[in-house]
Image 1: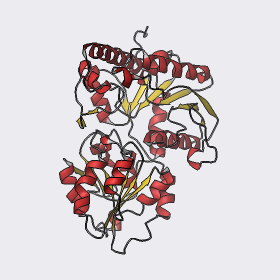
Image 2 (image 1 turned 90 degrees about the horizontal axis):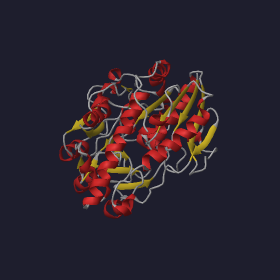
Image 3 (image 1 turned 60 degrees about the vertical axis):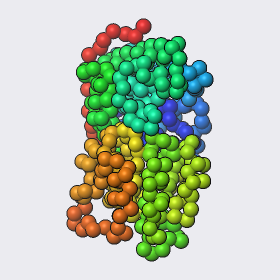
Image 4 (image 1 turned 120 degrees about the horizontal axis):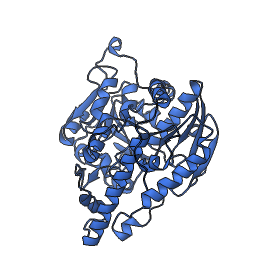
Length: 416
């Protein structure tokens, strides 16, 4: 097949899980014998010397302006038509190329794009975050998971104390956005990376044929390279227990909460390695940085994996509802005990454990931290109990190809 992959997250100076996902998919599709090209943003230059950005076909930098903020924070409300204007721009770029491809597969943050693409185009999108019905993409507010469905409640995420005008404008914007997203899902094929994402969208949109679920996956080739050459800090004692955390340093990831509970209880041979950047990076370094708690800043995917390969345990302390965390899958594939909260799409990943009990789920951070700090330096799992990891890009490609070849969902009325 001739396949065009599209994502405004590529290229980007500090790429996250979505970018890693779609780049791994591009390479896996090419290995399976398909012709794969890529459309990305114009905001950042593609570094052709970066091995993580190696693409199998042509690269089209044709998605402009998707990172612009439109001053919503300053105005204190979500702006009507903003997301439609951006989505139309993405759709125009896609339509200029679509005739040359058998399928266009979009991985991005504007799920209403499909509402502006004719049903004659074989268009598929994958939903990686909560942005199908949440305008800040996380469904996380006031330090906790948000389950509200009333659009008026969403005004509190545009500004902390919305006035009457701001509340009405934001509510109307959210209503229109959700309507257009639902139209997009009715017109074109949609993939959710977890059952949780599909379930949460249904909570706001009501029942419907909204799409199918194909779990997230990892690049097993990159992981095997990392496992062959792990990097452990040279100054650690021989009996050290090393916990590795990789994630954006901002409140939904819960890294600040974990450190606040764990650091006062660290044993002398316990070390924590944190990889990631974000708005909390400097404050966390100042509060917790030490010989026993080390911050590496943003790391490339390859660097992150070689550090994870040297860990005694992987922690994924997200307090928001992770849709299908790449770092959880990487911890499982590396045969590491992996600690996380039992929320979001994470419990679904128990299916990919390589030995029973590997993914250790907790109801609260207060129960997770003691379990994490008791991790042993020597695995009690016998080698004969470890199964092959079954969630690489190659496994997902077969599921996605079946979706590519399927007909479109039932079409409904066009967005005006």
